[in-house]
Length: 370
Image (cartoon, rainbow, N blue to C red; front, top):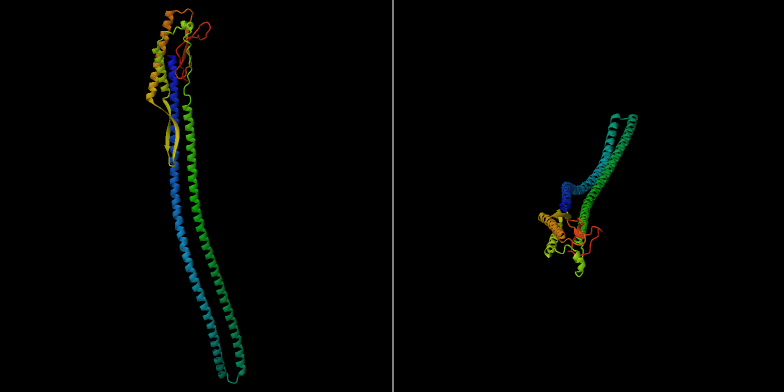
């Protein structure tokens, strides 16, 4: 019973390890799913922000195109303004000429009036004429100064307009540069997105390759020597002396067949734990992880076969002891069962009590499963 309990505990420990691994994989899957959901939400928010920025950039590009049309209209208005200024200057020069002619005519008329009024008093006329000349000189100097100031003001206004035009052209160039920079930024952002997608796909492919390699290694380890048999070979049937000493020669061949069938069923039940696959479907692709699954039907079959094997071996041991006590062999022998308790199996052979060695005799083959 202790052997049965030990074998049952070994099987339970195996399935407990499988359950622990399954729970660990499930916890890891849940954590990865939570991370995937958070990253997906972040990606959606970033994509919405990118779409909004793209719409703003398109509106700015439209405004830049409108600014270009306004610049052409401003150039036409500047040309018309220059023409109006040239016409104004020509009209001002004509006005000055007419004013000079009018002033000369008025001066001659005033002189005639003074001569008629004063008569022979030429001294007064000369004094008044000199004062009039001085006043006219001052007036002409003031008018010239006024004209110079006006010309200087016109020149300064023209210079101001030229600088304003240069500033406007620079602003247009800056707007065009900003347009090109925004276009380059959008292109760079698209290239970065494509690069990130390529890197993520490469990482997913590398993870899939690593998972496939681990899966292949585990399959190879499972396909290797899953059980190892240790046998005690039969002795030659011609050795009549050893056969006379064997107290187990009375065991029937049906017992051997039954033991072999139980061993085969136990080996089949040992393979009840197989390697399975857990497929985690994500946005970028499929990620595979190894998982150990078990069949409850085979687990019950394994336990029933183990109990049957234990009862069969106990029955064989009782029968062997009964026949040994009935036959009473010449040598004082007893049967000692020795074995390695590995997955519910053991090996047995009769042992001499005096020497403690296994006697050489033909016995049925004992199978130890590892």
